Length: 300
Image 1: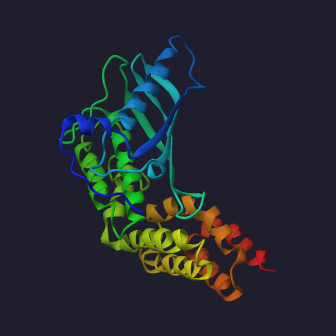
Image 2: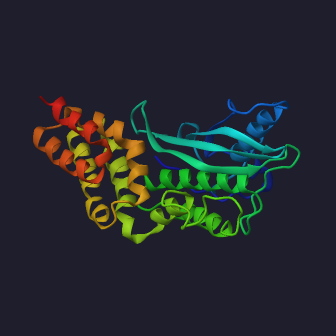
Image 3: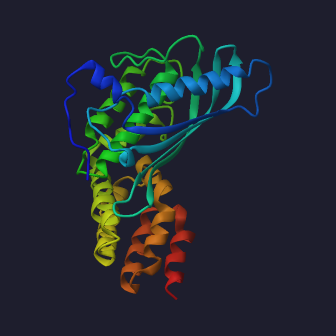
């Protein structure tokens, strides 16, 4: 099912395959910002869109139906100067579920530490060895997170390379003026997101991503009971890491993306399985306790 790895032999051939990994929709809104020259926001949208969708982020060939669907939604809340902007960013990505017409949300996250300079006459260029632009670094960081999560869902720890690239972006940004890159600023920022993904303490989360998607969802249409059992085991596998550090960012990230889907998966499950998974879910995701109670009620 997954992409074959092909070494591109010529620059011409490579250029024809640019952006075949992602199908990214970019939006930039600024409802709170007053003033003229609102064309800059459309220029910003186009620049970000072209940066994401015309860059080759991997060495793999994707079929059209395998391209990762994602969205970057910038909400500009303040124009600090002619070329400096502040706001928030909503990122969402999904991938197809094998043998169905369905998609599954992989990542659904809001970043409130968004501040950057943008000049519509300067191209967005990523320098992988140094920090040059906060906007470029933020976008490249999340593209690599999206890719890493997607690859983890198809093979065990398959996204390591992309998480390493995201980690390198964080390292290069340690001296940046803008926030969101450093450990001491808060416990839920870009630093901690990739730290959790690369930390062996939370390795069970990456195992969960593979088991949940490849061994669970992708087989659900053919073997629903067996696949649901695999998902139960994948979720249960998270308990030890959660008990060690229940405030780790990665748990919130996972359940923000998956809670509605999990509710649907277990609405038709066996009573014993339903009770077991709800006990685990209430422990490792207490914020959604009311939602998990609905799983029990769905069987009554």
